[in-house]
Each structure stands twice: as structure tokens, then as C-alpha cells.
Amino acid sequence: MNMEQSYVVPKLDHGTVIDHLRASTALRCLQVLDLPMDTRITVGINLESGRLGRKDIIKISDYELKGREAAKLALISPDATLSIIRDYKLHGKHDLTPPLRFQGIMRCVNPGCITRAERTTGSFLVLSNDPVVVRCEYCERSIDASDFIWD
Image (cartoon, rainbow, N blue to C red; front, side, top):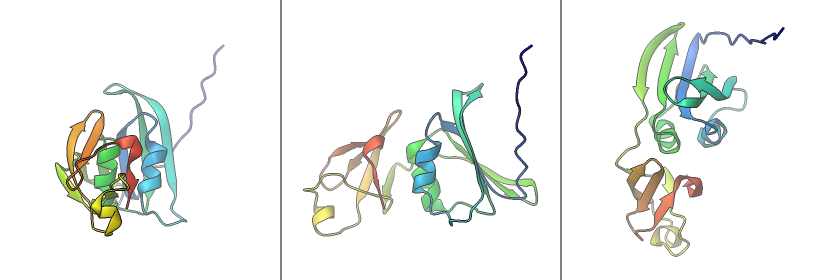
């Protein structure tokens, strides 16, 4: 007889749910968030998904993501959804879509780029969402998501 184990994850009374993350991206997403050290986090990795086949999910208690953090997550996993929970109820749900152009989220990887030499805020254009590729507007170098250097 095959006995399946199940785990119960309590509902959030207040916080953020980041769902439909691309499989195996949850830990990278957590690295770019500015979360306090004592934050309670629930992470699911490589879960079954009807929409994606496999997905990751992150539940963060007592914390609402800021715009800059959501933009970083959108660059890691453009298909993700962000839900804000207040008093156990859905307060807002948003698709995370990468901005077409952004500044102040990451730095150029090119050591010869003017933004590195002069400590100037980088400016980037999103070239592709699948896979995620951006281009530095100063040196025109294309950068894959795996090479991003976050600010």
C-alpha cells in the first residue's frame, strides 16, 4: 500500500504569496529580496502545476514586497504572480511582468562599462522574457538572467 505524506502549510494572515515561479528559481528569488532575518518563509520547489508543468512557490509572512523587489522577481521569473494577503483575505493579485526598461535594479556585468568605472546607475532594456535577456543601454552588452549582478 502506497502511503502518501502530506504537509499542511498554514494560511497567511498577512504577507505575500509569490506563485507560478519558474521551477527551481525560488532560492534565487529569495536571494534578491531584502527580507528581515526573522521573516517566516515557506518555500515549495518543483511542485506540480497545471499551467507550467512544474513550479515554485514562496509564502512570506508579515511582509509585503516593494516595487523594486517585484521587478527583480519579474526578471527572474516573468510568469509569476504576486498576491498580497491581509486579514487572511486576498487584497491584491498581480502578474509579475518585467519592465521594458529599468534602472537601479542591477549592474552591468561588463567590467569596461562606464557604469562600473564611474559608479553610474545602470540602465537596461529587456530584449527577451523567455529566456530573460537584457541589454545595457551604455555599453550595449546583452546579459542573460544567470549573469545578473543585483544592486
